Length: 504
Image (cartoon, rainbow, N blue to C red):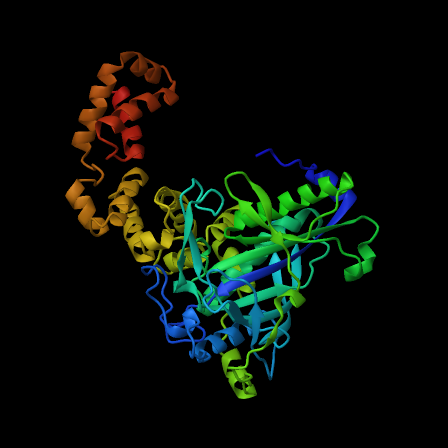
């Protein structure tokens, strides 16, 4: 497939104003599904978490999950929304190959929450207030597993299998108003917004928020309008595209940037933008056409006849409001100040989804910078190799036990990495691994002196340089000693002994 022609990003911004709108779908982690008693569990064998409602079997009737309603209200409050005194469900008619009843129960003109705002902060310190149009409840569709082909996508697949386990999982879809004024920061704004939503739902405890599992999915709407229309507001907007189900923060930023450059190139050539959905391809860094984008009328919404309107009491709303935790944006600012992280260090922590892990590790007695070093370094590396989530591999308490051995002089960083790997592989506690592998640092000066003398004897030219005042030459001896001791020596003590023995 030919490479898409793109306009230079800065040139695109000279000619056009980018406008984005974001739709974020959040799967709720209730025990059961939105409208049935079927279990809401990730990773089960295909087509095992089912009930008649999930499959749309004749005679089956939906029943609203009360816990999902409470979760949705709490999310709406965290988004600064008004909670509707009356909200209702509607049928959204559309061909869903993975939705047995061939329509989705959603909310249309009566969402549970509306008219909110979310504050986000960019790396530069710029603060953006993202306007929220609505947050509405709905059920998720099932999942198609495409078999054959090289990408796992429908293109090139030999056939597709339907897994209905996800059908009926509770969702809240959060829809923003158009976001103006982002300019060059527009791609970063999209990623920062989704990151903030992820932090909010995690802090509320209402979603597992694992983007790689699809617990949070973002549809990014992008349009451009020629310069000179900035004061026209929503009255003059370009034709939008909607890039579907982008499932990482980095990909969201890349997809928005790509669409800005792609659309700018087409418009500069006099080609009209097609209103359509588009698919993001992580391997090529491009989007490709999906289907023509439907408008609300195309879905033929009508009130769901099997469900009564929801009328949450003001007392319930205030009770749920009292349960709200510290807002993630405020929490981030507080933690960054407490930990003393630079903007770049804190960005890496946020992008890695490690804020909670580092906070828990600090609470376990580990200095913040030390906790950051291990989580964003060795643990993230192992997690990346295994396509795993860092927090699934090791606990903050286990990290604290390793750090304690480093502080006690039992381990150095090199040996600590081996112990961490052993913990992750299930070999036991930090002390058990040190004992079993014999990893403790050699603190016996007798053994160290013997190794130093042997290294000096093997490298008489280096010895003469040290005696001649070239202290930096000691590095070669130290390296030889550390190799001979298999890394199990205190490098600082070895250096002291090298200099002492060289002058003896």
